[in-house]
Image 1: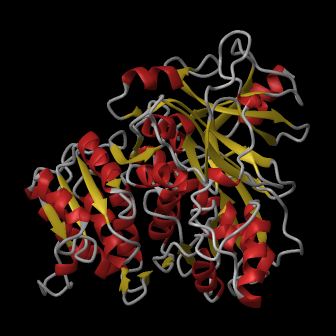
Image 2: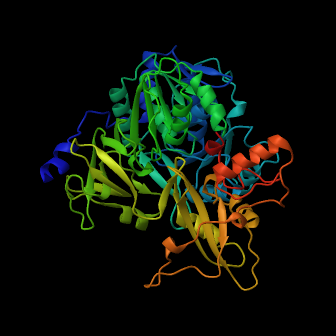
Image 3: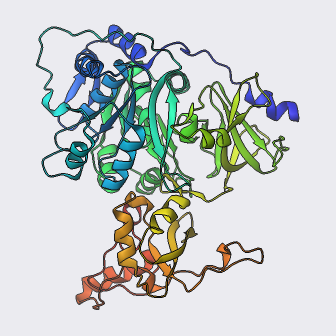
Length: 562
């Protein structure tokens, strides 16, 4: 059995372009299909040759700024054709891109810029328009800014070749993506060119993706799944269709269902809404889902294959994959990846027994940017592979099933997955602790119905503190993304403790109506307001809803609205 779970089920060796760069793979595809459509946005489309020329111009400008191997370049813009041009231009210059979601609060963007120390920022005029928070932030940072809205693609009539990428190897960085950090600050995950090339090779082979196929991009730029959507398509000759740049789940799914697609990815929460609607793109043969725990299966049989995928950012998007069978099955390891279910001593556990999931193989990230201690704690020596190999401790609980697939069982620490986002509760606690008058704080993800979690903050104030939900919510909105802002804020005189002096999280009470950011109460007026207030109270789990209350302040989110 040891031989089976350690060796046989991890025999995943497959050929892949181990010595290539992403830019080289794309350029080879340009040579094969220069006139094929590479990317389609809301108001523009580019062929492979046109995308190549525009990205080359960006690359030359970045090289003039000193960009080369392992040099970081921040990229901050909404989903658009220019976004793809910018990403590709950074890679062609030999650099590593650091995606920044322009919807993040100014304080978070400032931290990401300071921590990643980029050589330049690539953006778009609409994002840095005069008077915007980001424009002021970049001015203060004093970084060179490349505004791609000024590049119309007509500056030169002659094709401009790619700049030389002297010294670039597959071991150099492709990107750094920031994830929530337990220390109170996000942590940057460093992913190499080689790791992404392995993801591309597996994806193209497993899904039969090729020239002429159509695929989509709906993930936010700060989500590592965006790299998964983009690079296999552009290195295989497919056409990448860019979803509407909106945070409205209903609008995005409406766009998605109207497309003609062969292969597509949806974050699990969006996929579950799509399953309930039963509306899908024409011609779809494979729907990939991932990024969160599935809470229910499609109610009707889908006319395409649904593939469930699992993987932390530290393992280059996807570590395990398999056709959807049950909500908790996450398949087996992908090409050139190993997965082990280990006990507290680092020993394999038998089939059917729960343990912590460890990941090895070429997909592992280099580590955390500027966090050697954290890297050493999470990326540990691999006792089962070749000398010098590493394993990533996921903090996830899993078990092997008799057929060689894995079942996901949840987390073993205080990190949670919420609507597709991986959140360190400690980061929220650290930001809340900065609020004047707070002495203690704990944040939980409480179950709120089948498959639903809700963030709840428990705070203890000083003797003269005046803490209310609305003020605490405003404080966090200025410091963390909206998906990390708790729905409810429970003020306690003290935190309950266990006999050994630790916070007794099981004893923390459920939030009551005063824990939400409610407005001065006025009862609903008329039949429509009364019906809506009743519906809100039901789906939000609150006692009453007044006519001035705000759906999102009461703990609502876009998927719950749907």
